[in-house]
Image 1 (cartoon, rainbow, N blue to C red):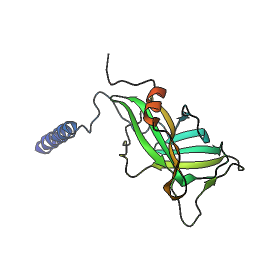
Image 2 (image 1 turned 90 degrees about the horizontal axis):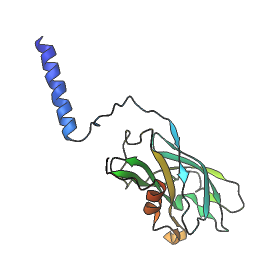
Image 3 (image 1 turned 90 degrees about the vertical axis):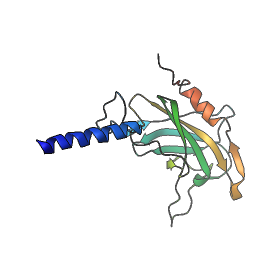
Image 4 (image 1 turned 180 degrees about the vertical axis):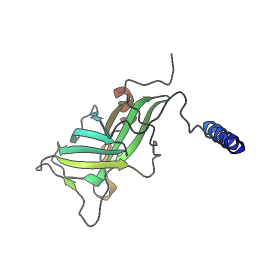
Length: 180
């Protein structure tokens, strides 16, 4: 009896501590991942984009797999592309983060050239951006992304989209944290 009572007290104390830290969702039941991959939609900047994206999916591990094709005469290294990705609506509007491809040695950097067919590329969250967490992406959310910038040789910017976050905000329908 004492063991059961002690167990219940310990469990209740743990729940109170986690709830106070904001780690427990309120009013929602989580049973684990409800998806493996979700469709993601490319949002083209008003000024146009030098790349075309299709067949895009975001996995439960926050890897964006997409097919990329060049729309310019310039060759672009895949590692020079920075995407801005967002999903929502959330309780606070939307969640956004930057993504880049990962160069894996000993293979040379993947280059997107105007004369090649579309290539499939994986993008991951940049280490400097906070990770949304395993339970952030819920079933009813939409996922959108756009090009934030493309750098060329020696870090020279060849394309920049300074309104990337606002563009994604609009694409998600300006999600608001206001609850009815």
